Image 1 (tube, rainbow over the protein chains, first blue to last red):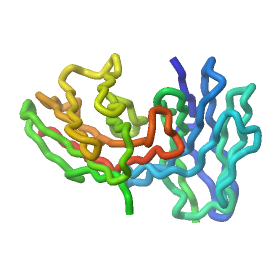
Image 2 (tube, rainbow over the protein chains, first blue to last red):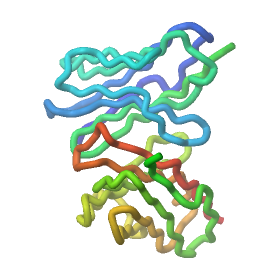
Image 3 (cartoon, one colour):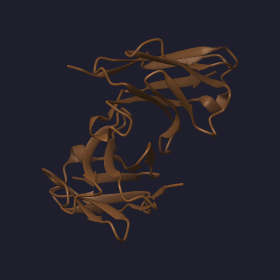
Image 4 (cartoon, rainbow over the protein chains, first blue to last red):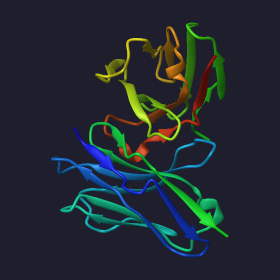
Length: 111
Length: 114
């Protein structure tokens, strides 16, 4: 079964600084998707960024970008110019037939 | 706006008393999913419907059932809630099996068992 590992239970960043959240996954598939979701205290799952495995170019959404290393099965999220509103739980998710989540990383942003 | 709506937002039920959670969608997506998320844990897939075809995860307890009377609605029934079933329940939809570009979550229902 596919597994998703987020090795950082908690991370902290200073406002306006950059932080990188790690994610690795295990799969024998070649066609899949990877996601990062943000979950604030309201528990709403908010899509941050998505990467198709067949695309070599790293996805970017404004201040959010990923470093997708397919051979290494690594999918890290970089948040630039961190804002107080970025504080939340972040989940990495792997998808082929259904969506599997990592354990999450709690991000704190210090003013 | 097209969306996935879960009702109620908060649900309190008594130990052992059947409870039903509701999910509706205006996206016309043909796949609907139910996840259970306990505090400080990742969401865990319980089951999904692909059109009318029901797919149960192997480790989903028998205490959990689901109904999908039409494309727009899907229900999660917990026959005899225990204290361990207290969690956030998330509904999600997608436009096709493996339609991951369209994957959309509802706001969730937080279930408390007393």
